[in-house]
Length: 104
Image 1 (tube, rainbow, N blue to C red):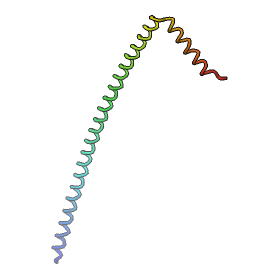
Image 2: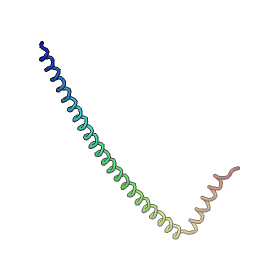
Image 3: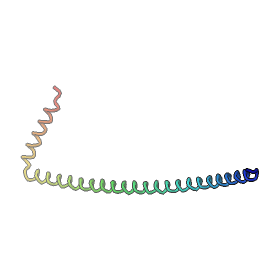
């Protein structure tokens, strides 16, 4: 092989290496962009889930408040209907609690 042919081959390899570097750079940039998009989608999905959880907790809290309000109203009604029974029940519960917490 002549010197000019070897020089020509070396030049071709250098050109190929330059193109390869450019392709690798472009590929790296594309991967970075895709990764950023996926991360953004993941954050959006996590945010949506967080909002749904917060909404569900809020609704559960409202339901609990409503149910406890109804229970208190029912209890007040029963006490009003039967005050003597309510006092005797409260006395019995107080005595039982006193026995359970007695330190002797």
